[in-house]
Length: 114
Length: 112
Image (cartoon, rainbow over all chains, first blue to last red):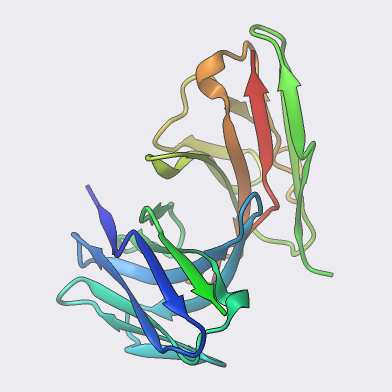
């Protein structure tokens, strides 16, 4: 059974810092990995999708890497801003099918203070 | 605008009173699913559908029903809600093929 773990559970940083959020998964046979952002009481916003054959994806100040063999992904946020404060979730689709359920980590609660 | 919509966004009901949460997507996606989010348990899949008239159970299907009569709609039905179904519910869709999944805004359900 796939298990996804995110470290740290919570992170508080001053504005402007570069930071790294970690995600690990127990079954390396993933189809893809997706990072989401969730604001309090709101839905999930997709940030980045990494296919199992890819090593990284970039969008603006965000960079996500994937090391499938070791079961790890990192989300790098450059020059953090107060507006980045949210819960960040990683999720994987396991197995050979492109469909299938997302298995989520518990999330990292990020607070960026001015 | 491409989106997944859910209604209602908030619902307070009583034990045993049947309810339906609607989900609709305008992206012609084949795959749709329902998740619930609970503190300490994270997001867990309830049911999913790979196409019209094709549905299957996720990890926590007990107490829920779904139907997929049209490609765009995937309602979640609680025939006899109980307090342990108090949760935040999300509908999601994807075209499959390894593409990203899109989530609705969520429905906060409270069962008294």
